[in-house]
Image (cartoon, rainbow, N blue to C red; front, side, top):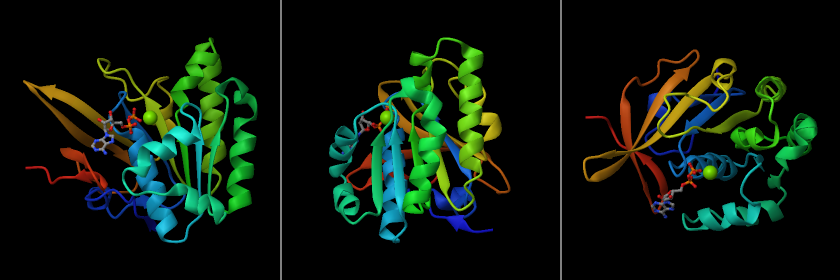
Length: 223
Ligand SMILES: Nc1ncnc2c1ncn2[C@@H]1O[C@H](COP(=O)(O)OP(=O)(O)O)[C@@H](O)[C@H]1O
Ligand SMILES: [Mg+2]
């Protein structure tokens, strides 16, 4: 089984070596917990290894994302020019052709890594919850069939709810689930991460503190 390095400092040992090649992994957490930074760090790692990567955003504009992470020294435009990287805004209102679009982008770039950020916004454009679930299942199943592409799927959850995903279906069909937290403990705010599910892996079972510093996300050892 091939393991794909996450690029997140300190995380791969908790994942039994990294993400399984071709797996679809859900990255979930409240707003501002670091999901978009995590995704960019994952893709940046791939680009450093010469792998082609695709970022599909349903939320923020590609320009905003690239600008946000330029602070970490990640110059995605350089790789766009080389044809190794593509960041695409997909209007969530056009969910019907999302699967088709994902597949054609993966095929065109022969992408090894894919990010879809985030599926939660579909709730804004589709009212019927069973329809949303159907659409999301369809998208996840489509991505799963791309065997050599490893995927991060972002789902934003509300802070106070215990749910792992927005629509309650994502976590069941994916291969792995990583939960990001930003919790106030007394006066202090602390970031932490949990590997909630990782198929075929002896993964870390604790809550691991992490920080976002100038180099991106850094997972500290649990004490
Ligand atoms: N250079 C940085 N150093 C430290 N923390 C940062 C830096 N840039 C962003 N952050 C933190 O990351 C948060 C945004 O992370 P982001 O990945 O966009 O969150 P999400 O996608 O989960 O909403 C900011 O609110 C801020 O707390
Ligand atoms: Mg985000």
